[in-house]
Amino acid sequence: GQSLEQPSEVTAVEGAIVQINCTYQTSGFYGLSWYQQHDGGAPTFLSYNALDGLEETGRFSSFLSRSDSYGYLLLQELQMKDSASYFCAVRPSSRPEYGNKLVFGAGTILRVKS
Amino acid sequence: DSGVTQTPKHLITATGQRVTLRCSPRSGDLSVYWYQQSLDQGLQFLIQYYNGEERAKGNILERFSAQQFPDLHSELNLSSLELGDSALYFCASSVGGGVYGYTFGSGTRLTVV
Image 1: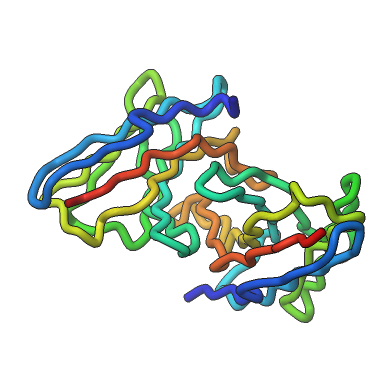
Image 2 (image 1 turned 60 degrees about the horizontal axis):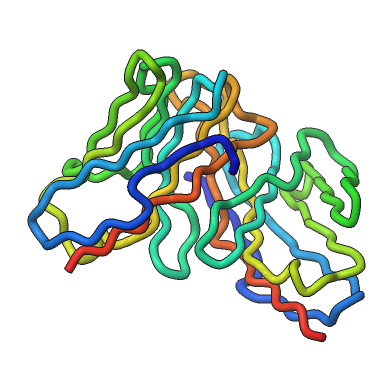
């Protein structure tokens, strides 16, 4: 089976840096993705790591260590609008019978305080 | 507007009824995925179609079925509805394997009363 673990909730102040961790156990691995979801809205794609290391996109960075089955999302210069749920997701396999489904973690609620 | 269109946005129906949720993928995307999100829960994968063919199935109940049509739009049919089926149902689409990201629609909020 597949499982992803991430903290249920994180609180930080405006302007700060916050890191949301994700550990995964899957029968296969073809990359770790991160999605943002504002309350009741559509999840939106933030980043993707297929290889070890850090990927940076503006204020957001994502890191992957395949040997540790671990990744994180780093948000810098936090803004109130960053208050949302953040999901890590793994594509477990490229096998045709598994298709291309993403398996999502339960999500981390980020609360940004002024 | 993400380019993925889901209708209806809201649906209220009684237990035992049947409903159909519709999704039009982003232009050019061949893969369609359906996810269920219950209150304060993560996204549970239901089913994936690629160019009209079912490619992957998650923990989709037997009461639920889906299909993708030649014009690539997809429908998710939910029957014999129960209170526990109340949830947000999202459709997403991607080009090919979607490894680099899915584009989600705004969802259909289903309330079973």
